[in-house]
Length: 214
Image (cartoon, rainbow, N blue to C red):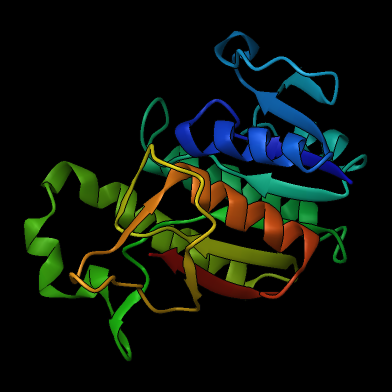
């Protein structure tokens, strides 16, 4: 399997690369700045490219067995650039409707109760104002994939996602936010990446959103 990965230098992207290599997959990591990715492996190719360039996306996608987008709405990109990059990917994917794409999504568009997303709940009162445009951009992108003619999967992390252990002891949901026995929604980058690569190997959420937590 040849994985085409956008956003491989991020916290989640790097773990996805390591997990995919552990499973024996070939990975082509597309980077605006290839020097930002320090991982070296014979099964890893690092290619200079940008999801904001639709022509480049179209050229790269021809050699992919599956596409993974781990780009962020934060960091060096604006929410509008994040949406534009995903629109480019969707437009290209619609020309390859059987090619699978897995999108690293946001947590706030999962539900804390049936029909109530976290982003529409009082939880947002605890969120810094400067984070909210990124949250809404992720929700807009999910809507774009839902309306598209693509073979998409949207994978929402827990609210608190950070470095930790690769335990394999996670739980999966669908549109629901997953809470542990203490009422917290948490997952490590390592277990998130493990679950994403497992979804590549054993597709269970075709044209669906799914979630993860402990």
